[in-house]
Image (cartoon, rainbow, N blue to C red):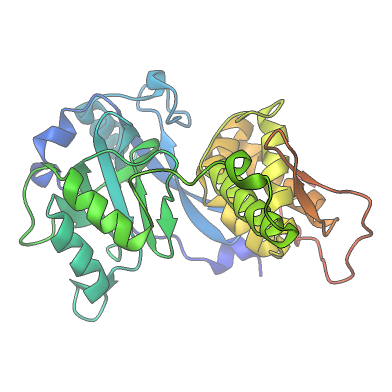
Length: 327
């Protein structure tokens, strides 16, 4: 039995446009989206209402106004629509697994965030998550995820359903102070980015050097997952290979690394670039990185490189081939 057949096609809530705030629908940067299965999971791939191809969060030519995007999604039987975040003051919090299926009410931890931010909030397409939209700026060097909680203000699109939560404001509110407080409590300090490595490198112990380097490698890995295109490397493919090396070198199995890459902004960008060969491309990239257990090092120029003189680890296995997918 194939992996494809074993994973049921996910359902999505219908879009209720009458409940979507006008401050969102008036944004001229909407996309449609549909489900695409990448190996063992379904991911939401954005679609351009004007071309029908995969949309990009960095290419305004692939966006449209709300009415056009909604009409395209419905006429082509796609799952829904989403709005692109570009760092102009609109941001969103994404809470996964935030709704108790037994009561259809937000979990206590999610309700605390919803009440604290006090802005427009709605159910995610699955009905099990929550999106919160507000007017605020996110520290560009700060963390963007912790467990089931993520927040973004650029370089991403967020799906929009119009299934507003009861009791929340009906519009997207200005909530910089509230955002900073919640962000600081959950994700870390907001006021300033962490100090640069160069400013603290001199005179510290070799143990501290190692700790700082691991933290820097973790940040570079997260930044690469959140990026698209070359991202400072020679090409987008080189950046894809670097993040695959970072994930496998950090101890993730091939399956875990593929799941992490496929669900990231970089994975979605690779699917867009490679078209129908995208899934096979991601699998081959991870398989190649998994041939070497590391160590993965961070070069002085900030690039992740996996040393290739270490022999193959006996516990590493390649991913199973999918029927009908390239070698």
